[in-house]
Image 1 (cartoon, protein in one colour):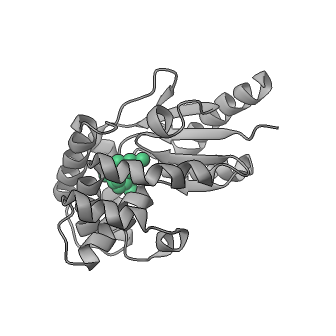
Image 2 (spheres, rainbow, N blue to C red; image 1 turned 45 degrees about the vertical axis):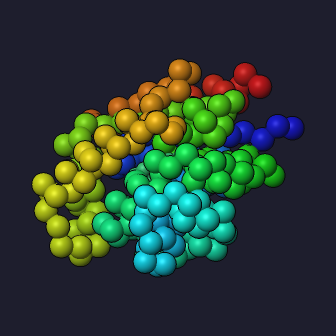
Length: 211
Ligand code: C5P
């Protein structure tokens, strides 16, 4: 039997990670947060005192990445946010990470979230979701997370960082952020996590019923 792949894309802090984890638990699938791959590449470049826009160095780090690297505890700092966005715009870095993402789903299917899962990584995914929310709502959410982590920042700084990363993700040449033509688009600006999950689970069940 073919294993099910659920592709979830969307901008930062749209709620896609929370939704992806819940779908993975509900449908008994492994989950991969593909943003972590770009964060690891960025972290490894910074560890070598390199420049995240150096294509040769970033690609070398992408080719050497292993599953264990995803467990590092230093991948969600503001410095890594920026560097991840820079390495993600390099086509050879993205190409080097493709096999890792595809292999992840080989044995039992998977839920993957990112920016190009439904468009590039799994264009034939069984279910494609594009999760979005207004910049103001996303900034409030990310600011609340940062405060809970006791990171000193302001709402304005968080908002500016999200806006800059979204702009870079949407306008880059390599795999720009956009919904796949056949994606279900879900705006979570006024939806809580339970309602977002209910809508997404319906789409997954419809896809399963058609197989
Ligand atoms: O999702 P997260 O914010 O952790 O991702 C970090 C960065 O990695 C994003 O800003 C984006 O530039 C990049 N990314 C990407 N493609 C993916 C996942 C993440 O370009 N599939």
